[in-house]
Image 1 (cartoon, rainbow, N blue to C red):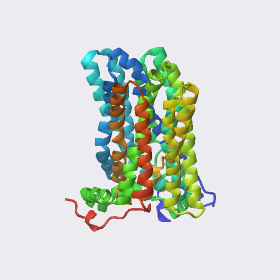
Image 2: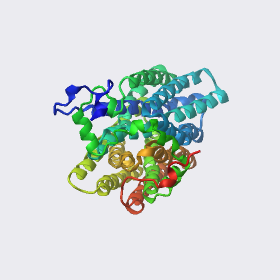
Image 3: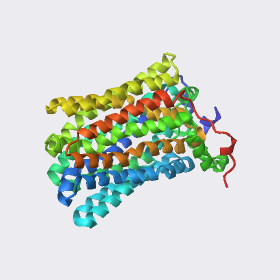
Image 4: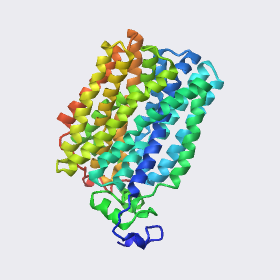
Length: 458
């Protein structure tokens, strides 16, 4: 294999028959970066009760502050996907990590202002954080598509996606402690510095499969034979990549029934995600009358369940594939069962004890984790010419929920004075996601473009 003989490629000593496992170290970096990503997103919810008290914000105003991230995150998805396809994941993702961390750090400076100036700066910085984070999950999808065979891709996607729960497990108590001891501004300084350090680490640890200094021929052959798109990160360097018609690609992706069902389903699933990221700590403080310190620790319990569910969902899906079941059945089964479990959160409207509420929320989050296989489906279905755009379109639909969920819940809470209607709203979205996968999606398979997407760019 001539590609292995270049100076930057693995040495001749790799042809020993002992397969390396470098792909799992790549996944570990993705997991750590995504953990920091979600911790930065959730920092506003941990700081939220103290911040709203300091700035005198209503529930509706907090809903808009919570949603600011998602407005720019959604709008920047397609440009972010284009950057990934045009310049590759490594450099695009580096700037993404560095910039979102810098803007998070600057959010601490809002404490030096007051009134409208403070609110305006806070909203603007959340917009910038959202725009900077746009390439992150499409980048995760591209990298796992390049590094993992189909039979391991469900678990790989579940692992990086489960970082959202791990972020709550690790950082919610930590950030609650930081806010309790040093004030809400300090949490933004701490998380911003941590992210900037991680951006530097990224540059020295991420490579494409053919050029990683630690991979051997056995592992490269194994992942390539299993369906890994090992040349995905070099596609952007070819002349053909510059002739791809972006608008034709987007049109074909949106006209595909399977993908449309997946996109709508992801919007509904992310409604659950954004409830836990934004309003859940506030629910614990206002509805269950916990202190912010206690809420930070308690919020970690459902997150542990969600993390466990995410691991289990990916494991079950991959085991089903290895046992000979179809890709469609293997991906859909955990999604449907998991989302059915997540609807149990409605029971919290009829429960008075805090311990039982946390138990039910943990079960709901466990189910949501099992069903969160959307990124595995994206890795399975994205055309190799436009993995970034495909993931970005998927993420655009999904994160519209980041705009609607905080605002809708804010209005529900302000109008009713309780979170009862909010829990019904979130559970109903889980039911719609089940409908999408059972009725709309059909067979799950990789999308191929017709000739109108190729060679027609100006």
